[in-house]
Amino acid sequence: MAKVVYKFGDDISTDAIYPGRYMATVLPTETPQFCFADYAELNKNLNSGEWKNSVIVGDNNFGCGSSREQAASTILGHGLIVIAKNFARIFLQNAINLGLNLITCPDLEANVGDEIVIEETKVVNKTTGKSFDTVPLPEARKAIVEAGGLVPYTRKKLLEKNKK
Image 1 (cartoon, helix red, strand yellow):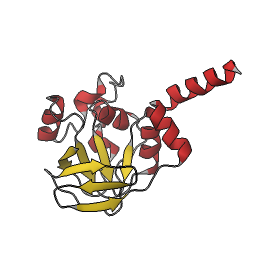
Image 2 (cartoon, rainbow, N blue to C red):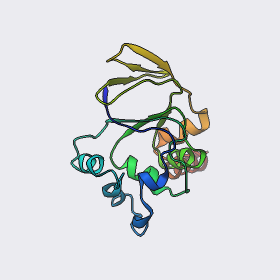
Image 3 (cartoon, rainbow, N blue to C red):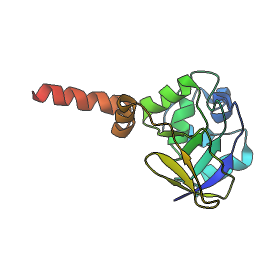
């Protein structure tokens, strides 16, 4: 079970997730400190480490804007679970390539403080007792996320191929 710690509306851009002024910092070990930097309280709480494995909720078009992959890596660095009604295409692919599992849940109803359980095909809001269907990733994309990202997935496939 995880707790919703922050709720966003529509059109959260990659610049809101990882502001462009920090683009000189691109190492996945360094980017998390700037996650949602323009949301001072959120950034402070994330950097305290208390919100690991917590849920942030978004509405439509989460991750819109530029194609910077740091927006996905900064979230991954905090161990956040992101559930949104839908994700911007490039952000979704960057997240998959980095092994960040995003959950698409078009009808989700959740607020800060709600307790959430993520199951295979649905999200259950334990606080309200409501259940919401998720949109599963295609099997190929799911395999990349489960492997930890595109690089580990490719490495695994090459090793399997070389053993034949």
